[in-house]
Image (cartoon, rainbow, N blue to C red):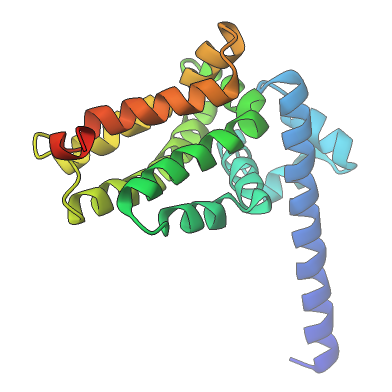
Length: 210
């Protein structure tokens, strides 16, 4: 292949990448405003491409929704923030930091997360995107629980997997939505109470009474 052809191919690739990023940005904005039921044609119209062109980039709504939420996570830097939180000096400090980091992020994703969760019961595409993100959310939790176990502060009555599942449930987006949004808890009080609940329930008795 000639250098000219190489350059043309690279330009097409860059153009495709820009279009995909624009599609995902537009989809996030529309779904934040209107919910995840926004038709694919509305996304295409806002981007300025045909619906057929949109499907060339994202063959299904599930592909679009999953890519959209993944891109937002990347743009937010949440993975790096979790890594920093999990690297706290002790496992207990890491537990506190991961919970705080997650709840700092929840208000940013709440409109789309709420819409995805609501739609997941009847919309397979929304369900696929929802569980993709919930699986991702368990990764920093798992790292913290494994560290609690390794440092001997996870109560021995807990199996690691059960502790991961419990902590995931305690820090679920729905908990924030129910207690902060619906019942009006202050974000600070909510985070403090969820953190203390996690420590009281998951940590060894010797740590709790120290």
